Amino acid sequence: MNLQENKEFIFQQVAEAAQQANRPSDSVSVIAVTKYVDSDVTKQLIDTGVRHIGENRVDKFLDKYELLKGTGVSWHLIGSLQRRKVKNVINYVDYFHALDSIKLASEIQKRAEKTIKCFLQVNISGEESKHGFKVSEVDQALFQIAEFDKIELVGLMTMAPQAASDAEINTIFEQANKLRITLQNKKLKNMPFTELSMGMSGDFKLAVQNGSTFVRIGTAFFK
Ligand SMILES: *Cc1c(COP(=O)(O)O)cnc(C)c1O
Image (cartoon, rainbow, N blue to C red; front, side, top):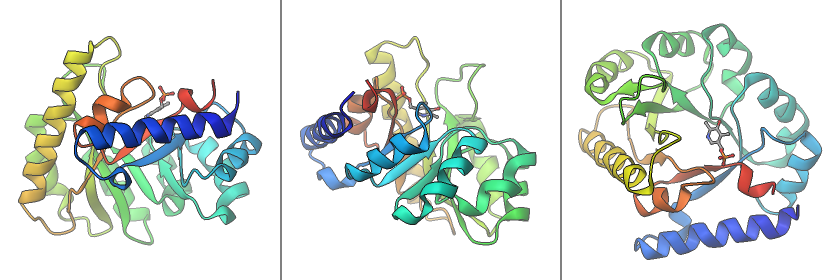
């Protein structure tokens, strides 16, 4: 594993995918998902020039945050968050990517000491196993979240089903971006919806081609 080479390769691939979509390469941020490695390796990764760190579990997020908070990177909590853990972590998070219920939003409102930038997680495919609001539930969710002034909805987050083909993933990502644009155009207070968190190691090129602004990449950094 050569972190510097992997980092450069990934950033190059993201930049190329952006160019192909006629987007500036700096319109896409790469979040390095460090759940597979310890704080030492995460520090080495930051030294290669990565500016965004993502963790999907609260305990691992806090371990790394405690040791590496002085490095100036942005901290992303990308995985589902249990309500009872909100108070331990939410004030250290720069971006929370998995807002998937009103009860969770209500708990964040209660515990946050600053405005928290959140992504509304949507389940575009409607698969039962996935977290997130169904598309048909989004309007009602926004109506309820509008009461919570500690939550800023910067965008949507979505994941493609594991077994999906490239064509299916492409359709899902396209729908996610269309939904994001629709919500952005509503110009709702505290809900800019300028961002789209989608794309992982296996599908980030398709995500960037479909308007993703944050790709969440783990495996490809550490092989
Ligand atoms: C692990 C994880 C990723 C990164 O997945 P890779 O396939 O390892 O790139 C992205 N998003 C979430 C929510 C994850 O848990």
